[in-house]
Length: 313
Image (spheres, rainbow, N blue to C red):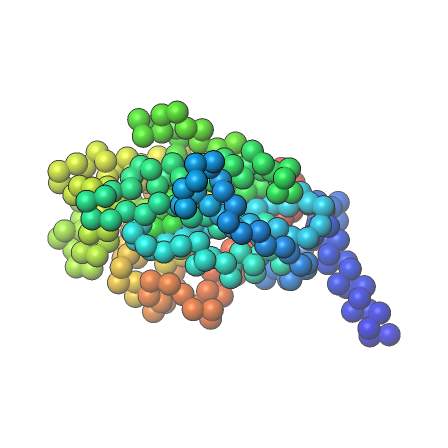
């Protein structure tokens, strides 16, 4: 009898969370959840080009729940100070959420080096990847109107730009911002207010490393070219129409000081953007599984209500 009951619960969960289909009338009646349950299997596809130019940076991996779809999706953007790192950083998280009914795409992008800045081409890469995913929504069995972006550190800077950019700026000429509907941005310890860093960092302890990395990204320091720092800053473009933001930062972060996320959060809130700042006590630049539980408690009900639940927001 217990076995039959367990099978019934699993089948009901699969129906509700939509691994076979992207929506269900039952979703409207689901109570809020703290943590999303594992509901389905997935298939991974690797080395997918998102631009037809042969660049080793213009590739991504996809983690698609098994079933008909269309599924909501998350775009994962790795960290590494814009100078290093790769998409494998987010493989585990992409697999984790694919098992919970969310398609995942981990993207590569070009990196910078001293004397070889990558701004704004690095943003172009992320925009190209996002547009490729949404233009091929049918192929990937996703719903381009239910999309979120997740980034860590430098990747959170790029994810936040996807959330706040309004189309202005000469560096966007000829580019389509995105045909996706981004409903959620998840910013793990991102340097999201470059003007704040430029104005305050040189006289505040703890900012030397992030200032050096931004100089490499942009190719100049703030004093010489404040306009470029301002243009590369997600905080510059905040409007009341931005998606929901979840910002997670550790109090012991010695690379990206938490004050950056605090000021970014305040600016979002002042514009009327729904913002959830999760402060993780004693965490450094990156969280272990236990520390990330406090983020998941905030994030996963939002994944449910904004992406998984079948309604217009």
